[in-house]
Amino acid sequence: MTRPSIKTLMTIPNVTREDAIKIRAIMLARPTEPTIKTSVHDRASVLVNGEWLRPASRLEAIDKILETFGVEYQRPGRGQRSPAFYYCNTGDTYASTILKVNGRFRVGCWGDIVERGNYE
Image (tube, rainbow, N blue to C red; front, side, top):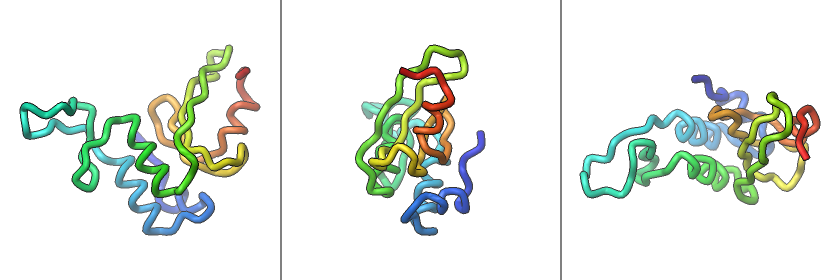
């Protein structure tokens, strides 16, 4: 699986090299089994900075670093090439941000995706 490079992450407005390194570390974290058997975490959780994160909350952790306005969800469009996706809401439809499309992290703007697809 590929993830955006540090250089690509730095194309997002106001993202420093340090921020890009933290974001990439969150993206690259591998699912792991907690050592405590009584833990409520499942195999899909990852340990980031001593905190267990569910897959959906990886974007929430990235959202905090980017200082955006939360994680949003776009339902799938009518076409086969119009998947559902999550993104960090910058407040601007055409501003670069982190997206998670088909289980992969990407850098782009969600407005372009919606324009190309058959979304309502």
